[in-house]
Image (cartoon, rainbow, N blue to C red; front, side, top):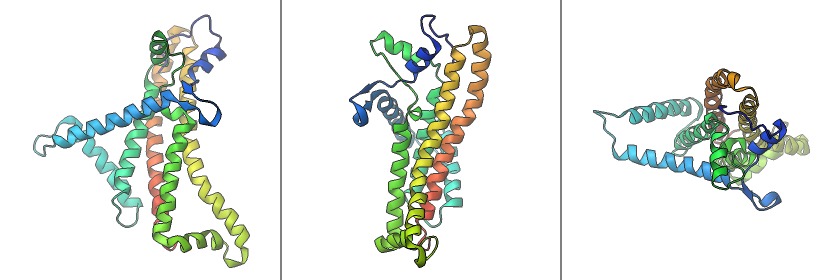
Length: 260
């Protein structure tokens, strides 16, 4: 959320480029985005600690506010799994819950004033800092590729190795167009992680960019515009977490069908 004006010495392009640059180490493909790893790991650790604490203090008679919130999220995710996933699976429910909460929290970092954490980082000698992990393609594609790996595992588990290979050979046009089938099915399968990763990245990157553009405006219009966009952006970050979770469940359900 925007709450500070860009320094007068910075041009708009320099200001935006600075805020969109990751703190990294390494070169080329092997560059590690340290800020992405830090904030993603920090939020994952927060989820585990809060879950562990709530799990130790569960009280059916006098539930705490946090317990009620967790139960509401659990019921919501469970209803989605039951309505979409065919059959029973011990992984899909916890996976859907983890994806929804983790992606939501990473998205919610976008609501922190855009200049706050970078300025604090500069005070301790850190030149660049991006606080929103999901505005990094590395994060969104890592999540998407993890889901894609599970899709392959579920396909092999439900169809067998031979059945999975046959899906590429004979779907969707039958045995007379095997070369076309291979190309079409490969594109169909590869499109799943690509669309998952790009959709989340694109929406969150665009939201972050709008906050940065608002920060370039005079201070007296930043608060109403930034506040209005932040309120709308709450819907965006929630919806993107929900869509990522929902599509993951849908893809795993499709992969679990033996006759697919």
